[in-house]
Length: 107
Image (cartoon, rainbow, N blue to C red; front, side, top):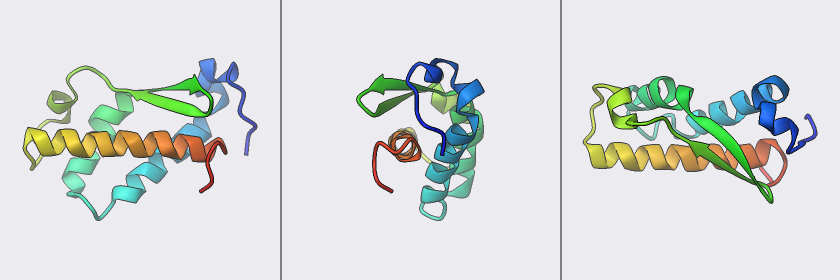
């Protein structure tokens, strides 16, 4: 595991690409089978692919989503309220996985 350096996180795609991919993949796998696969794939490929993780300090991360995530996701088999709830859960899980990958929190 690469030692975390907050300054290097400014260039996260250069220094921490593998760790970022691991966190996002772990979050996706956590929800696999819990929610409709079409919904999860749309969130993953059309919304999260354009998201931006930020290090907030004190071991905390924040994932910023692109504008209009529901519109970006396209035609998914859920209502807006369900979409928003699932997306929020996935984002929370990514933030947790980032803390785990960078060893701020036990797995």
